[in-house]
Length: 308
Ligand SMILES: NC(=O)c1ccc[n+]([C@@H]2O[C@H](COP(=O)([O-])OP(=O)(O)OC[C@H]3O[C@@H](n4cnc5c(N)ncnc54)[C@H](OP(=O)(O)O)[C@@H]3O)[C@@H](O)[C@H]2O)c1
Image 1 (spheres, helix red, strand yellow):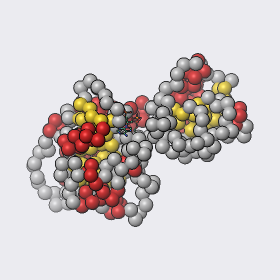
Image 2 (tube, rainbow, N blue to C red):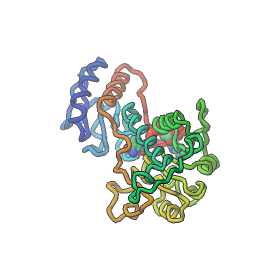
Image 3 (spheres, rainbow, N blue to C red):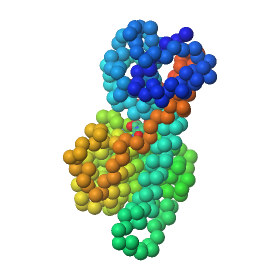
C-alpha cells in the first residue's frame, strides 16, 4: 500500500476520480489530506495554492506531482529535492485550445463591432479570411502546439517560436532573438503560451512590441510577467497594439487600480483560460505513479535548471 499526500485545496474535485484512476492503474493507495508523519509519504500531489512549502521532511517521497502546468512557484524551492512533474492534462489542453481559438476569432471577425453597436449601424464590411490573418504562437509546448494546430485547422497562417530549434510538420518555426523579431513582424495576432522563467520575463517589451505591425492584437493566457505592463499600455495608447486580451497578471486578482482595468483596449479574463480537469488529470497522476512503481521513467519531468 503506498501513501499519497494530496497537498492541494481541490480534494472535492478529485475525490470521485483519483481513487478510481489509481485502482484502474493497478495501484493500491491510501490518500491522505494531511501528513502528520511526512516520512511515511510515497508521493505528493501538489498545488501552489495548497499548504506545502517545505519538502525536506518528505524523506521517502519518490515524486512531487504538480496539478498545475506552470511550475514557476515551486521550481526554485530549495527544499525540493524530489523529482518534480508538471501537469500535462488533455482536459486542460482542450480548454486552452477553446480559449485561444475563441479569442482569436473574436478579434479576427471583429465581433465587438456587432455586439457593442448601440446605434445599430449597418456596416456590411466583411472581415478578411483567416488565411489572410497571420498569427504568431510564442511557445510550442503542449499548449502552444495544440493551439497552433487548432488555428491552422481554421486556415490561420501560424508561425511558432520556441527556445529550441524545431522541425514540426506543416508549421513554420523560429527560435532566438532574430526568430522572435521575424514572427512578430509578420503577425496580426500574437498568442503567448510560454512558461514564466528569467528568460521569458518581459519577452513582450517596448522593443519587441514595436516589431508588431500597427494594430496587432496580443492574447496572453501564459503568465503575466511575460509582458512589460507599462510597455503594453504605451503601445496600446500609440495604436501599435490594437487590443490586448489578458488572462494572467503579475498580481492576481488584478488590482482594481491597475491601469489595465480602465483601459478600453484591454480585455481582462480572470485566469480562466485553462484549468486542470480532475477526470483527466487523475489518470495522468495515476499513470505517473504506476510508472514510478514499475521503475519506468516519469512523464513530464521538470528540468529544474531550465525552469519549466
Ligand atoms: N492561463 C491559464 O489558465 C494557464 C493554464 C495552463 C498553463 N498556462 C501557462 O502556459 C504555459 C505553457 O504551458 P505548456 O504546457 O505548453 O508548457 P511546455 O509544454 O513546457 O511548453 C513551453 C514552451 O515555451 C517555450 N519556451 C520556454 N522558454 C522559452 C524561451 N526562453 N524562449 C522561447 N521559448 C521558450 C518552450 O520551448 P522548447 O519547446 O524549445 O522547450 C516550449 O515550446 C505554462 O507554463 C503556464 O504558464 C496558463
